[in-house]
Picture (tube, rainbow, N blue to C red):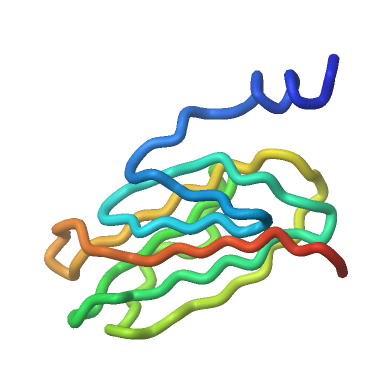
Length: 118
């Protein structure tokens, strides 16, 4: 099977706001739950999550269904950077959620960079 066909067949549907791809960078501003297919490389991904608001938020990050960050509180203006390197390349399904401490959806900036080298 041609790699692109297999990758497309395995993909899940994106949900939430639009995730924008420019070169090796994917960005989104999410509020509540969101998910998107992101192409990775053998060198992995760098993920940055930022709270652009004026109040603390609670965030989650899952990669292919595996919890990477769970119910972590992020202060206003704070940024959390993570590196992910997995055994496979191709499409990964990245899911994020962000909520105010009272449970209402809250804005979070997401930036994912596909690494080009080790």
